Length: 336
Image (cartoon, rainbow, N blue to C red; front, side, top):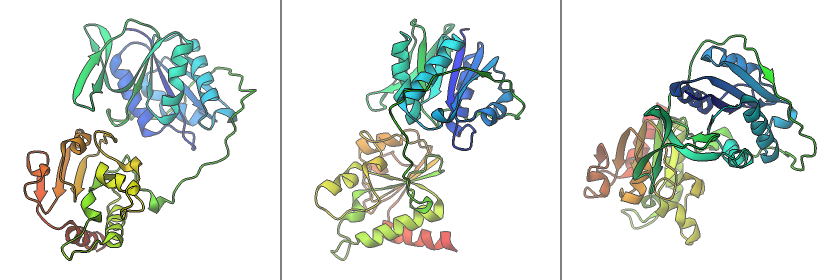
């Protein structure tokens, strides 16, 4: 089997995040010699974290210049690690950092890259990747003869590698970061209790356009909808998704949920999450929206319409009820 290089960048605390450990599991399943390439301000903690993974070498590019995501330094670090490893296949998690830098690295090294892979395997003795096409309706298995071959693996497709930490031996790869024109000025992030997108949450709560429509009394209750949804997200520590019809309302002059953006959009033109459970509310279960739920294991919905799309085999359980009343009761139970 060919040599595999796993690229990973450290987090602010110097360790590897769950997506990087998921990619490590995938790399080990391919077989062959495994080399780890680490990038970050300091990599000792990350190297010790995976000391027992069976890698033949652990290479590292470290220094303050590599502490923050930046195309020029990330690409330079990845290129140096690839050249030092001499690996035929380079695997990395599809974080925003690697998704931005690795296509350019593949071009520099005259290689090829496949993005959004959901699985890697050995097919007829050759490495192969699985990838979805046509809005996650067609799954293909691809192989390449071109080397080096870069693969960006989507998060949530493999269990995170777990093993006992140890004392790792790290080979330092020198990279000249002088002359970088891009400077890092800081991070702007919402408060923890205002965060609505939680990729690691067990539950995905999806709101449909019905939350902002007229209710039984003939009036809209957007403020109540915001209170109920945010209360549920805090109580259940759930992640928030939205249908296209709801997130598009901001451009139509209608009353909207202030915390809902296109980043929350789930479906054909949005994201495809991988949560254990999903709860859809005030959404009719149209096919373009439901396709985004393809990898959610257990799907439930709340809708007043017993004949909505969710009732046609798209949900495991459909509650024919008023979502306002159901979520109000859920919040009471969560707060008890």
